[in-house]
Length: 459
Image 1 (cartoon, helix red, strand yellow):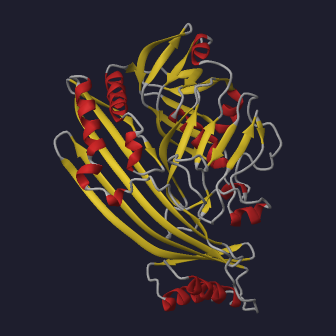
Image 2 (image 1 turned 90 degrees about the horizontal axis):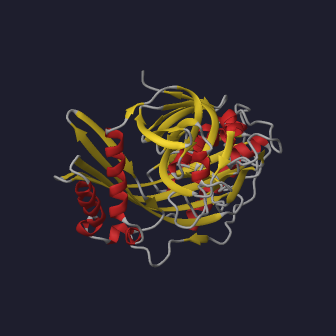
Image 3 (image 1 turned 180 degrees about the vertical axis):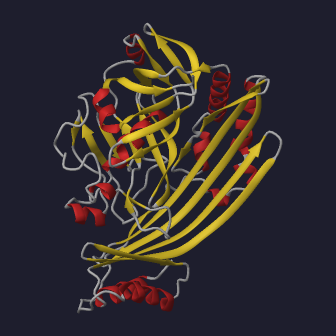
């Protein structure tokens, strides 16, 4: 990693050339990904990334550049290029504060310290359990992702912090076949932990869940469309709110006045039963961090509380533009990206109903067990989601499994139409793709009901 002396020289170079604020972000990362089926290891790749990103503010303008050359000469040259268009002025010498060091627990089984065969044990366990689930399961495909990232962040205000981040995750895919019809199911457990994580979870149960989904979808009927109540299962059903309203609560769009939630702090934006939280400080979760990518400690941010908009997710630059304080929400994929406000672990808080009460109170609707993905227009909140395992609800009972359902709506409207929230909260793992790259996120919720929603079906 860069020495304290070299970092101070870079920051000095920036402020003496006119920067109001300067920041150095250094990263050393190891990434490994292996994909296997019941037949063979399809691929196994390993890569390393090492580089430095330098960010400079002048007023409310941001200048960002990066390099994988860590010599003093290269870093000073990059700084000069970034400040070339800025007016020069006198500035005091930068003195960094005491380094704050964040590390993983000593019990962590670092992926880089394990043999290939040891790391493959949960993969092989998942493949065997999935293939043994049912004769219609014809293929299992499991991907293991491991990441070790060490970062160092310093800025012209004296911040000096170092963080070590370790992540591991299984992507378990199961494929069921009946004649020429092939359908798939999926389960993807992951954590901000090392391989000790796989001793804490039931890998076989995860694989059986993926296989169960595939078999259910295989024997599902086409979903009818129309307006109806939609009950969304706990866990990764929370992706609905991550996409439908989470992105619209990020300072990236708030500062541009291009969100449906601009100017609504303290106002009612959802039904009374909705409390929406983003929390990057949950111990060991896939979307968690010790500090964000500006060096601010992560925290629990209550975005919506009992229907009232309480807060946004804020990074330093867009916070300056919008007059908001940072919330530990600034993130980037790696040193090649400037950080912006992004979600970490976003979820709907538990409510007072039970899943059984929600189903019984629904005369006609769709029960969504899994959401695959979707898209949203942050300025309007309009969204479109594809689903996986779904069932019809008829006269208060879950009946026919269906497939091909699409959820269509508006984030603000959905928040208002959530009328029942259960207490069976669960948090699942995923990825989010936006302006500062691909990031690991958690999305969760209890079982919830949206009283009225458009469902696109298959004719």
